[in-house]
Amino acid sequence: MTQGILRMEQIKFRSMDELEIFGHLSIPHSAKPLPAVLLVTGGIHGGVFQEDGDYDPLHIGICNCLNNAGYATFIVDKRGSKGYGNEYMSHLDLCGREVDDIIAGGLYLKGLSQLNGKIAVHGTSRSSTTASLAISRSSIFAAAVLASGFYDIYPQYKYEEKYRSQIFPTKQSMQGKDIETFPHRERSPINHVGNVNCSVLLVHGKDDTIVPLERSVEYHDALRKNCVDVELITYEQFAHFKAYSYPSHPIGRTYWDKCIRFLDKHLK
Image 1 (cartoon, rainbow, N blue to C red):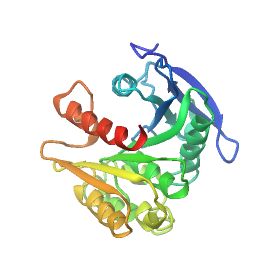
Image 2 (cartoon, helix red, strand yellow; image 1 turned 120 degrees about the vertical axis):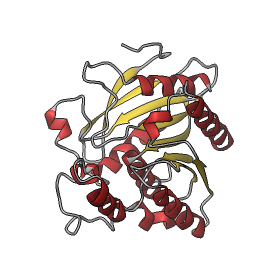
Image 3 (tube, rainbow, N blue to C red; image 1 turned 90 degrees about the vertical axis):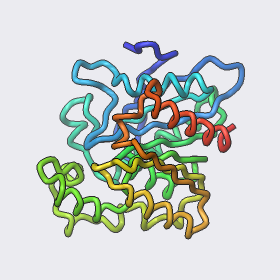
């Protein structure tokens, strides 16, 4: 089902290691080629499907919002995402080859004649980490919107160890590996800011108890020190991303209006 989406098509494409990756493409009708936003789903595994096999209504709302603003959307369910069986989920690879999946998704969009080749990437929570690594490893993205994310794996791991040990999503994303043996320095975006050459919009809520605001502040400062065009927006009444991110929610409407203005500036 597409639940009001202008058009949603499931796409299969190959990542850098030839693993088949799943994406969901929506291109609004237009007389001219359009820019695109590549969306990366958040959470431990990510994935746009609900348990009943229907699309997550949040992403339906986001795609409708962006489609109506003149953007094609491509939701990339990177390796490890739920909704495609246990084997696909078993490929979960925090900030490893899943980053290649995002870049491969961008390359897929580059090859579509209906699009103009200008692509932004949007990530939330853990997928902001993946998306921010993608912009440091590839120049195909013209802009990035990163919400409620963390960009240094070690302090986020330690924060969760202290305050969220019952859930411990970062350790789950690392498939139970201990932080001291995990290549967290190599896989932390904050250590690769010198390779970022696109504009970045960071968004974080001051009420976020899942990923502290400090994570975005640190990344903003590191990007700015390396002369990256970056802006950080904070919201007083904004907890972790999903609670207020529906375009129909008053705070979500403000968020997406700001995102679209940012995208228009850098992609149109």
